[in-house]
Amino acid sequence: MQSSEILAELDSRRSRVRARASAGWMPLLLTGVALLGSFPAYAGWFDGPGSACGCLSTSDSSSLSEAASARIGGLAGGSKPLALYWLAVVPSVYFLSVGWFSLCRRRTGLGQRWGLHVMMGVGTLLGLLLSLLPPLDQLVSPSARPLLTPLLALAVGLVALGRVERDRVLTGAGAAVAMTAVVVAALSHYTSGLPDSFLGNIGQALLAPSVEVAGVGLLLIVASLFLRRARRRTAAEFAPIHTEVP
Amino acid sequence: MSEALHPATELNDTVHQRARLGILAILCEVTEADVTSLKAELGLTDGNLGRHLQVLADAGLVTMERRLVGSRPRTTVRASKAGQKAFRDEVTALRALLERVR
Image (cartoon, rainbow over all chains, first blue to last red; front, side):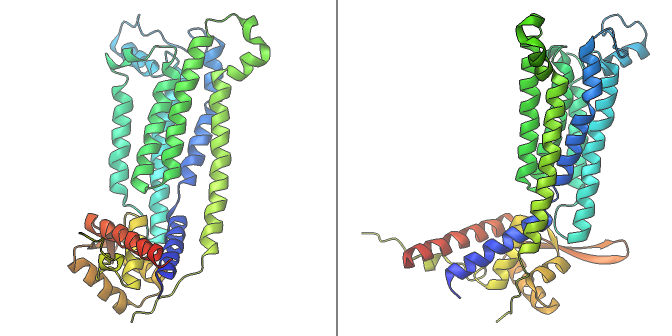
């Protein structure tokens, strides 16, 4: 058998196995839905932080339960609905993804056991909770915290999943979510001081963090559906290669 | 004067076999695979696959683990670091050989 034939066979086999084992579209879809679902909470927060949607002040809490509540609110810069949303959604997205990978592994017999996933998920959650503790919470300004803290936790979770599953698309998506969080937080920080007339109505609407986060969510949903389709097509394209042992 | 060795000398006797190359190609794409999926993927019989896996395991290129999933025993295989390196080196040697022929 020629070297070129062996290499071609190896390439096609690797592509087929990668397509069969790749299940990264589901975490991508879940992340997209989570980002899209955050739109009402972010929109409420930007309508008037401190006034609307049960926002909490982190400074004047007197009792222990109020302090704990304020600490949870601190996850999202003082917005309790946003904080509760992300505290529920980030672990859900992660563990639903782990369940999905486990199901796919059972179906195809290819992939990683769930122990490592769970360890990474617990690590990500601990990181998220640690970021709420002083003095770490002081590293991020309260105005940027609602965007940075939860989205970065989500991004770290995606990158971790991508690394465990050897899925470059997931790792890339995690990096994209992290970049989005940083860019949107920076834009929100720098445009908050500008007068309303400077940006105009369209500029304000487009630069609203809620719209930008939801837009990225929508992009992830579309990308996940494309990925799913491409995966199915690739898996069907390669016929099984039978090998006779000499 | 030192002359570069012919790429064929870089080929690994243990790895340079169609089925074993296939096994390593699969295990280098996924972290681990069970024997049933390897068998289906490569179109090998139980006996053939077992023999090739034993050769790879004896050379320290793969590790096998047998455990119970529910009440059924399941054998999973994963490529060791040495196995991943051996596969990469084999592909590099094959490409070099191909370049030389061209």
